[in-house]
Amino acid sequence: MTIQEQRPAAMAARIDRWTDLVRPDRVHRTLYTETQVFAEEMVKVFGGESWVYLAHESQLPQPNAFVSVRMGLRPVLVTRDRHGGLHAIFNRCAHRAATVCREESGTAKSFQCPYHGWTFKNNGELVGVPWPQGYGEMDRAEFGLTRVTRVESYRGFVFGTMNADAPSVEEWLGHARPWLDHWLDRAPEGEVLLGSAAYRMGFRGNWKLAYDNAGDGYHPSFSHRSLLEMASRMGESKDMSYFGRTPDDGPMVSYSLGNGHSVIDQRPAHGDEPGSFWRNQRPQPGREFFEESIRAEHGDDADRLLDLAIGAQINLSIFPNLLIIGNQIQVIEPLAVDRTQLTWHATRIGGVPDEVSILRMRTQEDFPAFGEPDDQANFEEAQRGLAAPEAEWILMNRGLDVTEWQSLVDGVIVTAVTDELHMRSYYDEWLRRMREEVR
Amino acid sequence: MRLSALPPQFRDTSAHSFHADADWYDELDSFRALLADDWPAAPVEEWHLAQSFLSREARLVDEGRFNDWLDLFAGDCLYWVPVTAGGGDPRREVSHAFDDHRRLTDRVYWLRTGLAYSQIPASRTRHAITNVETVVDPEGRRLVRSTFVVHEFRAGVAKTYAGWYGHVLLPHGDDWLIRLKMVNLLDSEQYHENLTLVF
Ligand code: FES
Ligand SMILES: [Fe+2]
Image 1 (tube, rainbow over the protein chains, first blue to last red):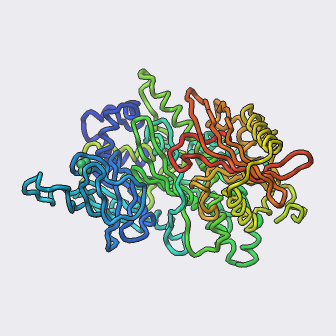
Image 2: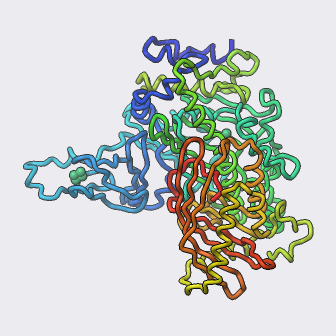
Image 3: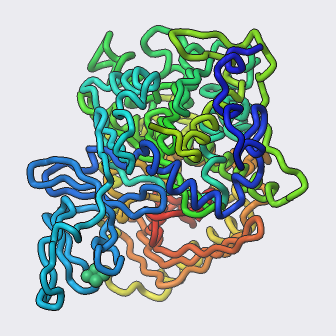
């Protein structure tokens, strides 16, 4: 028996309409195709029961800043009030539902609805309506913008939930927290800044196809063949080529972190010494020149600095919508049962020379151009395949019966990078949310 | 750094990128300023030359002759599709494409691997180019501005992309080489599915 099977199985614990659809080794196609399932997910999985990622604090650099986001399908404004306090309010007028703000980001002390002119403070309070005599005695406190019940930030990452009883973000991040810390602590100033315009990539498929993939170490050597082939144009293939070499028992591992979170650790495929990330990186524009000038200027410290131009070599998935990939923050934004936006935010860091910042931008252009599109093509083709009703199942049984793969380390299961444990684990959390079993 | 000044081991710009230095970024800023200027109407002959060049380039892409298309680019070229309208600051921002000669060679190689699933089936495209303006700058470089509409059909779906091109062309014998091709999509920072087509 594998370690996962030894745990008290949430999915076996209850008999309801999901019992037949989410099995220990497979899930049913209708979870990816039915609009009713999607509508429920948008409420329960995306915020109704537990936390979802909303925004990054660097998108709200000063008091009265706002950024427009989605929480599931809910249009939401994440705002700072005049003291800098964070709020998340529905961008949905309390009167007759029009959005009160149509800008993507900016600065505003208040929002006046363009339809009939109700005006709300940036914390959601109603401050006035035109010709109030039409309402007799109006209790303005009753007619504010709906607030996201709880908003919490962890080191710049802002999460929200409608569940007043959810655990704290720190508790909910749980075993994922040290990984997020590791990713942030790579930056000399301990924080990342968004700032660059994001890639808003879209694909015609269900959002879970993206989350399935995020913890999947089985696909790279195949789905990314074009990238690997291109990388060998000038001889030795670099970068992700190690995925193609015996990935089952190679040095990389994947961890199931609980609450639907997981991480793939690619670092063991690199050396430990400073400069090993840099050496393994396929060359990007300006590499030779900027490397030479960084080495000339910074001597022994150059390897450390050059590594900061390269991704962290971990893929951290925080259920349901936050993916840390390389140096980038990717947000899964479902639009419809068969349409999804994947927003990729490149990150900057302070405390490094300009040359490193330039290289860091060039590095972050590589995978979105030559890697991700092939995955998204496969997601779209999976969605097409899912249209066949008689072929009912999506398998997630890789590694399920391989007892020697999994072991328990500090309370989390570690396993082969090609184990589909990531999917099996997050479906536990998916079920908890859909069954409204979260505290 | 000028290509003629490159150390010998870095001369092959399809394999090395030593020239893409701080000056190269600064020159990019100056090109953008030039492309933002108002220009006088070009003499018919020049206008015709510019238009013909763009049509030829577009045809090579539409016919999938990517190696021939690549041959149109200079060693210190940039094929640039910004995300931020107007380009932003590429030193601090990412682009859809920011291809020096090596990365552009990679892109063409990638398209031709037959393994890029995002291009199986391949995009069928047709580029329509209008509103051509051109001027030659004091250094003899031909600047061209134009409006494009790219129709794409792939995997059962027809899509349309619109925007404007900025070209900086260098004289090369009787012909020109592309020093800069800037592709300004109307909706560069918005939702896009599969931008692996060539603009
Ligand atoms: S809908 Fe906003 S004021 Fe009427
Ligand atoms: Fe992938």
